[in-house]
Length: 166
Image (cartoon, rainbow, N blue to C red):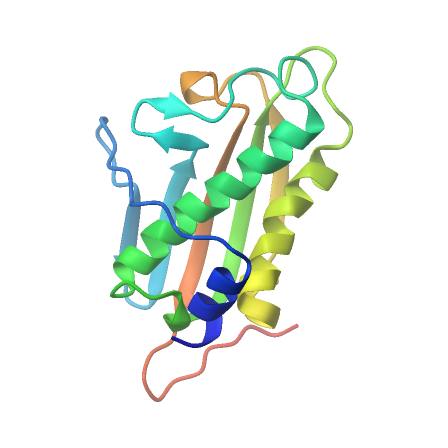
């Protein structure tokens, strides 16, 4: 084991099993060398979430950060699933969208909370984990989840390099 898989293990982290959806959509789709991961919420199991509620109200900043990291791990689980079980095939994280369920007193620290996910991606992939992102506060997320993330990832194709301009 080398590369991203080894760095994930060195961080003391393991990927959860990909959790199928109960609804009419694909949790992830590979098209060519790109994996598009649909919104992931902080699931402990198919029917249990790590935490539920509004960020800044029922969910404090520390809980929200942990939920973000769990969402990232779920997204990476789907990426690995579409890359024959390994994150070493990841060439570049292309984009991450962070959605936070917020109330009237929305936290102004949502970007800081999202950093926990972005920093995890950089720890696992190095420069290939650096990515553009959006951080958005919304009124409602599925299953009262405090956070949902979606992600697009480019996989390496033998003989090609498609690294984006910086």
